[in-house]
Length: 175
Image (cartoon, rainbow, N blue to C red; front, side, top):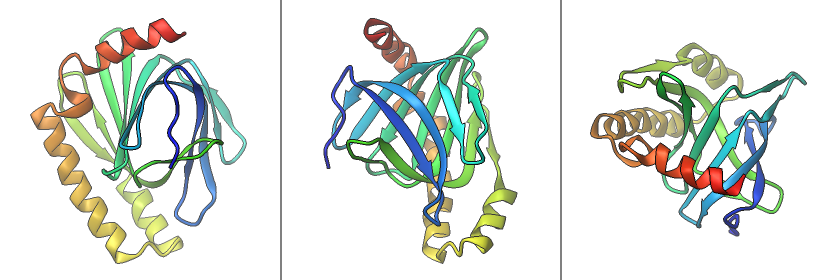
């Protein structure tokens, strides 16, 4: 697998289990790009939904993708602190078109005080039936929820104090 070069601008695409395109983020500047990990930054970018709706993100964000965990993390920099949005989905792949992953509905929202909330369990249950998620996928995702909660409580990876701020400073140099 190729990986994006630092300073390059890429598109991020999420898909659903059935192969349909779910959401596209128009541009993310690569701050670190290896076969194991991609860290990117963006600010007020256009997002295209599969139903044709478009919207702009409201604040600068640092995105963390890994080739081994079934989640990615977006650290959103707001006036009252850093909020995290964690998407449960496959590890990323990258080709010359975009960074891609399959979104499996479940999300964890983390607040600046590091409390968190598991979201979209109803959407997961519906899509599991509609798209026939294999039982193995549910097992992996439930284990991933536990792993992610552990990362949050241990302040590991993108949740480490100073992580988002460090990469945001790097992002400002590439804008």
